[in-house]
Image 1 (cartoon, rainbow, N blue to C red):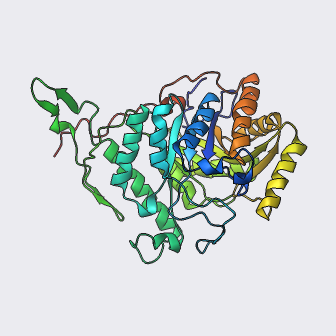
Image 2 (image 1 turned 30 degrees about the horizontal axis):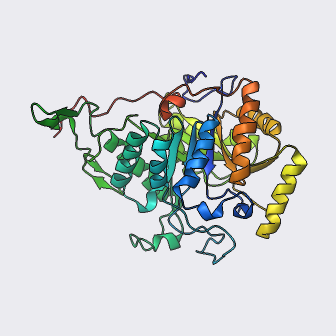
Image 3 (image 1 turned 30 degrees about the vertical axis):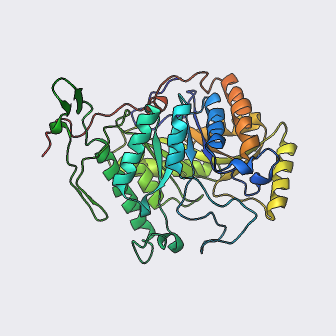
Length: 405
C-alpha cells in the first residue's frame, strides 16, 4: 500500500488503498444490539470481550479501532439520564481498556476517546504516552468535548457548560498542551548507565511553560517521549450538516478527522470546508486524513440486512437513527458506496457496526476481501506503528535543540 501524501497534505481519492477503522461501542451502535443471541451482554465489562473484538478487527487488517467513552451514562435524552432499563448503560474506561488490550495485539492502532472538557491535559498526555509505550507505537486518541450540564455536575469545575465555540477552543488548547508534553522529553533523554549512575540527562527534559485561557502547564511530563513521538490525534464532527467549531478543531489540531455526513455531497462539503480552514491556518502542507463515519448492517443480501435492522428497531421500540449515514446491504454494495464516497476527498472510513457480533465479522471477512479483490485495501500490515500505517512521519521533538531552563 502506498502511504504517500500529496503536496496539499490531503490524501487523494485515487486508486491508492483506502484506510479502514471500526468504532467499538458496547454490543454495537443499535440500542437493541445487546439482545441479539450472539451479543454476549454478560461479558460487556470484561477484558476478554474487548480483546476478542480487537483481535477480529486486527485479523481484518484494519488500521485502527476507536473505543467510545463519555463522562455520563448513555442516554436518549439531552437533559440527563433517561432512566431506561432496556438499553446498555455503563462503559469501561476507554484508555484503560486500550492499555489492557495493547499487549494482546501486534499491528492494529488503538484509539480511545477522551473528553477534554472535564479532564486535565497533563493526565491525558501521560496516559496516551503510556499506551504508546505498552503498544510499541500504536496509540492514538480521539478528543471530544462535553456540552451537557448534567455531565458538568459530576465535576464541579464550572457552573454552566462553556459555549460551543469556547468548548472547542479549550479542546484545541488541550491538544496543544498534550503535544508539547509529549515533546518535553528528548528521544535520548534516558541514559540508563548503571556504571556512571546516570539514568536521565536532565538537560534533555524541558519545561513547556504553556499559558493559555484554559490551562497553565509548566511540564515536563513524567513519562518519556512516546515511541511514535506524537501519537495520532483525532477528532470528530458532531452531526451531519453541522461542522462549525468541530471542523476548525480538526483542521487546526488533528491528524485524523471523522466526518458525519448523510451522503457523498455532504462529505464533499465537509472536506472542502476543513481543507479551506486548514489552508487559512497555514497548515496545508501537513498531512490530514479525513474519514467518513458510517453505521453498517451487513448481510448476504440487502433484504436480509433490512430485515435484521427492522427486527432490532422493533425490539428498541423505534427506528434507529444516527448522526451520520446508515447503510444496510451486502459487502459488495458497501464497497461500491465507499469507492463512490471516496471521490469526495476522503482517505478512509470509520465503520460503526450496528450489531458488533454480526457486523464486525461481516466487515473483516466480507467487506475486506471484497475491497482486496478490487485492489483498494492492503493484504498485509506494512508498518509497525499507527503513524506508519497512516503514512505519517515520526516528527522530531520541538524542544530537542533547546536546553532545559
